[in-house]
Image (cartoon, rainbow, N blue to C red):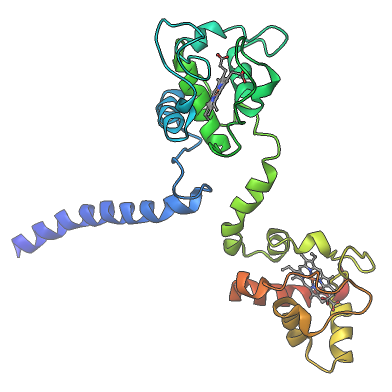
Length: 278
Ligand code: HEC
Ligand code: HEC
């Protein structure tokens, strides 16, 4: 008996620790927005941790095909692009006619390399956020810290520097996988872009008709189907019946494969509720 008691007291903390790791392992992928092959960068990382990741990122994404890191060589090393060693010292005050501090200058050099051309070099560097490097915003933060560490102290945290221009489309596609987790009907409508084409206010026509409970019930009764069946069909098989007076084939045809079953029934219930009061 004593032995069993001993085992029990030892197993409980072990189980607690084990379940923590199981929870943690499951929790990580859902809080990250980057595709898995990217470096894992979280907003809580210190600039020193970010600089270490930035070092790896710069090597893996081909920056060193052009840049060299040759201590003591000055800006002109042996590469097609400037020598990075000591860049933090050389650019501590930014550049004449451009950003007047290191971080703003580095951000400009990565987002818009042509905005200031280092003496003696041509405009051949692709923006770091474009192919082939295609750095994400978080990776830019990491690389800026790494460059800052080459002669200076890394100081930048995620959120400190501006996001790349035109990043919105990337953010929208990155948000796509998580749309399946949205449960609140009005948020489902925005997560799947429904709100871009449909207003919920009677009479307010966007690209598609306003979605009101009374309007939907009306169309359903004209077609002699139940309101639920009609709304469900409109979403999963829009081509089956197209409402007169609206552009044909515009409503996405693949929503049935994207919405989860739970989201679909939540939407149907929501759109048919509140008797057109919205
Ligand atoms: C095809 C060659 C090439 C590649 C690849 C390249 N660069 Fe450059 N880079 C240059 C050239 C040339 C310059 C100088 C002309 C200019 O300022 O645009 C430069 C300038 C810079 C500067 C300013 C340096 C200074 O001394 O002021 C930074 C910072 C920089 N690059 C970072 C990067 C990073 C980070 C990457 C990878 C994501 C990268 N570069 C990839 C060619 C390249
Ligand atoms: C790109 C624009 C667009 C998007 C995005 C879109 N729709 Fe539509 N939708 C339309 C158009 C146009 C019609 C009218 C023609 C037709 O019936 O296909 C329509 C019709 C409908 C109808 C039938 C309306 C009626 O009065 O009979 C419903 C219900 C509907 N959409 C729901 C949705 C939902 C839910 C989403 C998001 C999950 C969505 N739509 C996304 C354009 C869009």
